[in-house]
Length: 211
Image (cartoon, rainbow, N blue to C red; front, side, top):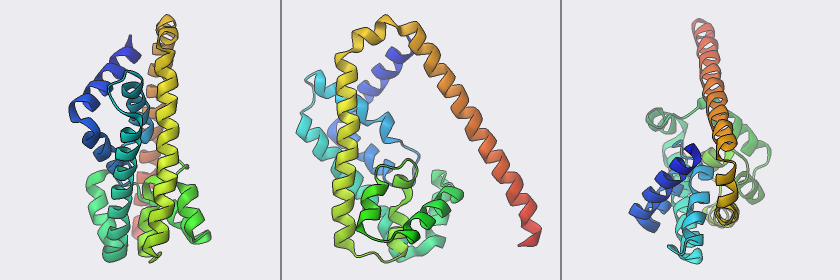
């Protein structure tokens, strides 16, 4: 069962690294590294249901990790500006198109509420701290909005994982169908990723001589 294998590997990795490992993963998720919280927090919920991790300690560790990662991105933007972010981002697969969209989102709705809401928006939540830094957003409101938003989002995913774990026997009963769905999602996701990157590459080449 593919889903069983994936869950076992994820849980084992988290067990080995402990709360610190979960915090580091969520710190990366809140920076420009391609680590989705959806691939981390549900398995934290697995460990909580299994009685291996404490619920509140798990929430605290992952929330602190999210805040640390967000602060790192904020400071990169604040002190280094966009050129520095782009230089570092090359090594972390930073998507410049997504960054531009996030900057536009932040510039249209500057403020604490924007940072809070962005924690629930895919892609934007990974990058929003950068324009907050380059835009010199006050640190205290940034920290408050980030902490509350990240904690709510992380907790939501954690509880989703807890519910899934409690109904794991039902998932296993339909293992074949679940495996097919997982494979299809992976294929579609990879195909979409490659297509988007190729299209953007063609646009960049076409625009190059004119810039």
